[in-house]
Length: 85
Image (cartoon, rainbow, N blue to C red; front, top):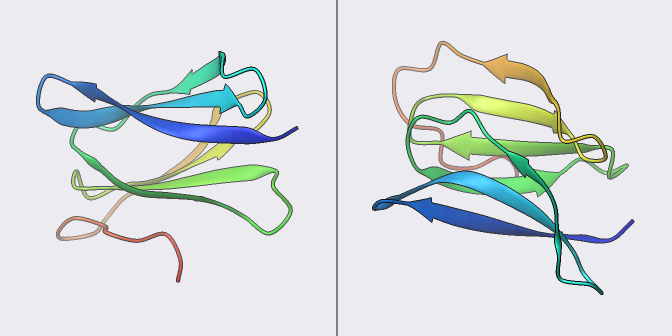
C-alpha cells in the first residue's frame, strides 16, 4: 500500500502524523504520542515500519499498516532531528 505522510499541526507544533493513501488522499490513520514537534519521519527498507524523530527527545517506531506504536525510544539528552540519512 502506498502512503503519504502528512505532519498535522496542533497549535504551533506539529506533533501528529497522518498516513494518507497516495491515490485517494484520504486519511488511513494517525500516529500520535510525541509531546513536541516531529522533526523527521521515514520508513524502514521493507516499508513495514515507520520511524519518527521529535524535539521531545524520543524516537518512535510504528507499524505502517496498523498505525500502532511498537516502540518508544527514550534516553536522549536533547531532540532527535533525523531518523536516517
